[in-house]
Image 1 (cartoon, rainbow, N blue to C red):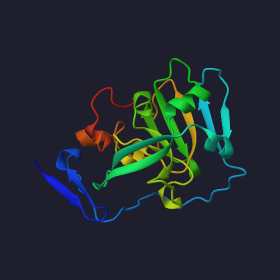
Image 2: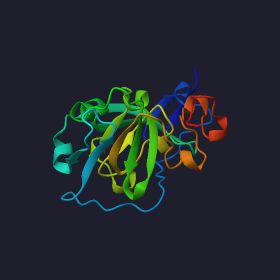
Image 3: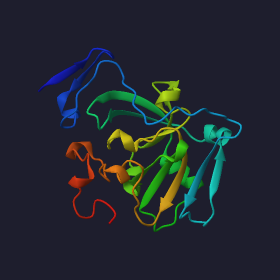
Image 4: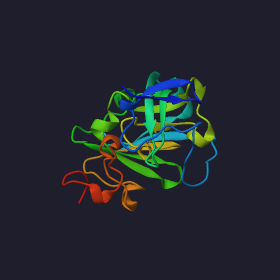
Length: 210
């Protein structure tokens, strides 16, 4: 059985945890598109919109988000640029707890995650509700740094990291799938790293909207 040693973090990783084509870098690279937004807690809020059960939009202040139940997840993180960060400890709000406060319509099968500056990524509801998915506020027992998504980011460990949207501002419930920012620009609609689903030309029938 093969192992790889992450010298920067002092952990030994079984190679079977690495998806095809991935490697463990030195340090913890940070990649993002555009500038890092400023955070104003007095005016910041999180919306839940689209096909809600009530038909109404829900909004939560930063103070209300901070009071939501906390969940901790330890998970690997796989960037489409081929590096993987292993054994990260994320803490935040589970999608299940958020949906208990802002329930979706029973027909919802997808969500769009919205971030600052209009950035977005779409997810199947099954991926949004997966046990490892989190609306993260902390990484390794410390608040997220601004360049890693402070104050709130979605973490979807079983998909490529462009689906783990930084600087989240809203969740839109969708009855029909719709491509997000990078999906509209040629990235795969599903983004499974174990299948190396990097680009839209790799999509099989049914894996993306028409």
